[in-house]
Image 1 (cartoon, rainbow, N blue to C red):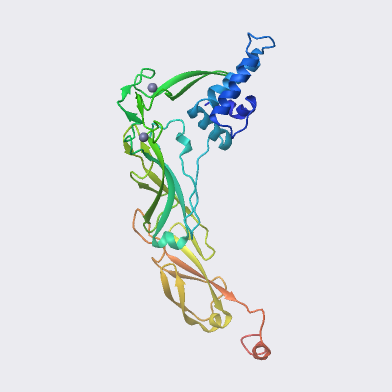
Image 2: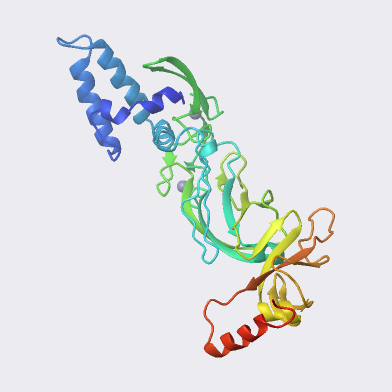
Length: 342
Ligand SMILES: [Zn+2]
Ligand SMILES: [Zn+2]
């Protein structure tokens, strides 16, 4: 579709708004084209052309939905649905990037947000999304007694020349006379000849440990039904990493901050902490300072290609209490005057 046309409100040209029905569009086009037809008195050639352009798009289901979506979301609209890490929220999923080419491979892509612990340990997620599935009544054919479409000679595609305000554009689109190159006298009543139906899918996905942000998990056959190949296309799962205040990742190393008391920093201690893979025993040497790093080798993230683990760095943060009791104050004041604290 010509991008310039996206900046024009075609509905306005037909005195309509976005919610107008097919009938209203047709009606308005008819009455306006009668009014402005160059052959009638007070006809207006340029207005008539505008109306025709608007109707050539809004009057055609495919053109209209393409126009609606592209004018709303822009040419490069590419839906990216992020779910929240603690729920499984998905909206309508439709791969708009291939919108005008429904016959071509039309995978659905979903982004799942994972926190660091899920990335390190792997997880499973239940996701909900919408697909176009095969109409069972007609087996995806749109009807019975199929014959090759005479308009597109069975290709399902037609090259249109559309006159727009900005000149003539060559536009290849789906043939409007047929369903993927076939016509029938016996249109399926269930899908109105579309061969497809909307279906909500709920599936469970096992996400392996250590997926990187660039990872793409392909779920074969979980996408939209493809009338051309008579198979289901794929579902692509993209991973997005939710920043975590405790665990940070630098390549395959994980940095984790742990708070310790000032007493433990001075005296040392053996602590049990919640690490990225569960409980960890942590030995604090005496005399550690704020920001001290303890390296636990090969406790980081496994490299997906080499299989080698990165390291885990525990960064110590020394807590300084804001409020202390009088008793503690007395002890600390005593300490202040002692040999190693002054
Ligand atoms: Zn059907
Ligand atoms: Zn056709």
